[in-house]
View: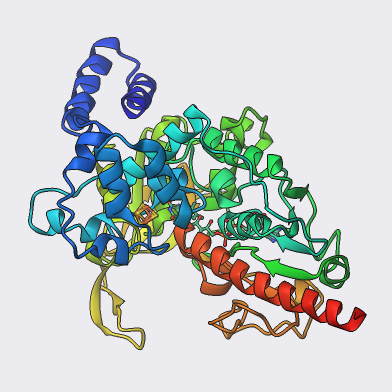
Length: 480
Ligand SMILES: Cc1cc2nc3c(=O)[nH]c(=O)nc-3n(C[C@H](O)[C@H](O)[C@H](O)COP(=O)(O)OP(=O)(O)OC[C@H]3O[C@@H](n4cnc5c(N)ncnc54)[C@H](O)[C@@H]3O)c2cc1C
Ligand code: SF4
């Protein structure tokens, strides 16, 4: 129902004529008619309990999906919640934003048999939303309290999952983040229409009630050095994500209405949270009434095009230099964007941003995909004489992210990084080159997924827990 309501608002914004809006609204209703007919229990009951849980194998946190589907089908929701939360710190978040078509649902045997997947993500979300509503989600109360503490840098999914797991073991945990709210990309990156911010804030509040401390608006490297953090805590986890936006290298890209994807999405999310954002108020980061061109083909690009539609853009085009099959983003997201009227210009490589002071058009050439390169992907090759101009009042660059230079930012040259700039870790323990310092999430694997961040955070917590127990035992022995 919530999704239908959202469409209604969008339709009203885009079609001020009431009769046209009514027609469009009917179109959207048709889209969703066969989308929500089954209750969670009915959906869960469609699981065949096939005994070959490909869904579970393809879930990065190895969720025990068949068991919680069965419990849900039987109406034993509290038990379903217990099973679900045992492997995933934020099931209500993954249920909303995992690209299930590539993970659990894409591997459901009912889906592969051609009967349509069990909507695993929707059931997962329903279980934990119900658990919150019924008061089954409780603050963590560890059986013992230890004096040792852990400093976690980054309040995104990786840092938060680790913080919860460590707190469950009784360690004292402080999470540091340069932003003013908890959640990392969950709060300011991923748009509200995919992940309502109340869901993230509800989790953050539960973590505070679990006596996990947060030091917000504290940037490590600026307000506090890594060395100081290592002195304060017995172990440190780096979970800072990747934020260096890849730039567009074409003439005219410096015009003021050519903006970075995260600037656009941060402004939309902050505005949605009720804040005044000067860039949004001035119109620079607001797509309303504009012809918007988004450049890129990943999930960030999809979030930009769909946000622009919701803000009331007059047209939204997405330029991507490969074809649909080679797009890194979720196919489900592409289909959603297409439904909403986004025009995809596949096999289009931007050549220049045109305009005098302000961008007015993007010139793009057609490409074809040549032989696979060293990475195994077909390299795009420009077709001579194929250039065409796409009108643009707002150009959004969504070409992906690289890690920031952490050894420099943290003034710690001994922190080893890979040739891509991600932090080098022992893959079994997630320990870094610095004693007692671990790393998890995007800063280790490069831009990835929330559920992988959770998995890494949980894995790092196991290693940190072991490290602290050994340290504690060593101190005890020395004292005896
Ligand atoms: C626009 C967008 C949409 C996405 N949509 C999806 C989606 O639908 N589904 C999905 O699964 N994944 C999605 N992703 C990917 C997903 O958000 C990330 O993989 C995930 O958030 C990574 O978690 P993390 O904890 O490693 O880092 P982050 O979530 O990036 O959190 C890192 C935190 O560290 C903080 N930090 C950084 N440096 C410092 C410092 N020096 N001092 C203090 N704090 C610091 C940052 O402020 C941030 O809060 C999306 C990503 C983007 C950009
Ligand atoms: S965590 Fe993600 S992949 Fe795993 S079951 Fe939930 S939605 Fe599917």
